Length: 254
Image 1 (cartoon, rainbow, N blue to C red):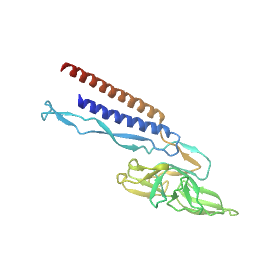
Image 2 (cartoon, rainbow, N blue to C red):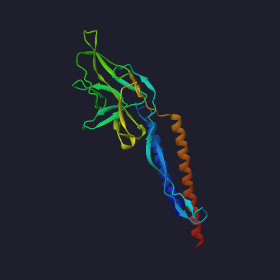
Image 3 (tube, rainbow, N blue to C red):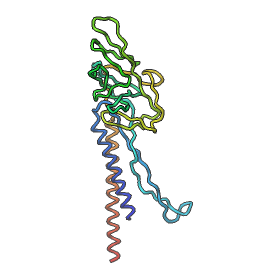
Image 4 (cartoon, one colour):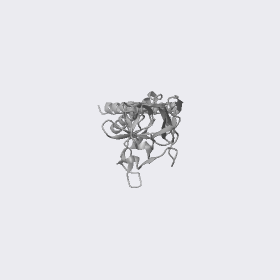
């Protein structure tokens, strides 16, 4: 009974963490570029008790726990904004950015702004690693589906090529580590990193004038929430039942 209490207590903690993850997904349903997370459940090491199995003992589990979270990198909906500085990636790929401390990270939140020196950066101030600088005399900025950035100089009919946006592609996007402001950090589990031109070698394309919304599916989250709540209630009942049995045993010994 003591072990049943311990396992149920661990299960309550696990399902509470699952509910918190679902709540975080739902609260970010309108956050541009947000990727929904899902728990990774692991069985804890089982112990051997008594006889009855092939090797003379019965394997008794010690419960489950959430060891990690994976992030679904499926595309979210695309919202048309009409702003030339709003870019969205349709398909695989992330854009590499430079952080203030000199490190690099990756993002799909590509609503851009121009820094004081004309360099393109995200709205959070992360400079694009492709180092695209927009001169002050550019009157119209255009980004093609293949990532080529051009600008139209005032009084000139011929567009000036300003740079090329490349996409970073990983073996496992789900293994990236999330950061604040929609950025992702590379991990060993993410596998090999390749820089690919948009619309080539399986990479996505750049959509100018669009913003990618979150890929949270409200129906899936509500179903997961109901399942987690029922599991929480069942384990609460296990604790109540175990407590009643222990109380009965305690009364019998008096």
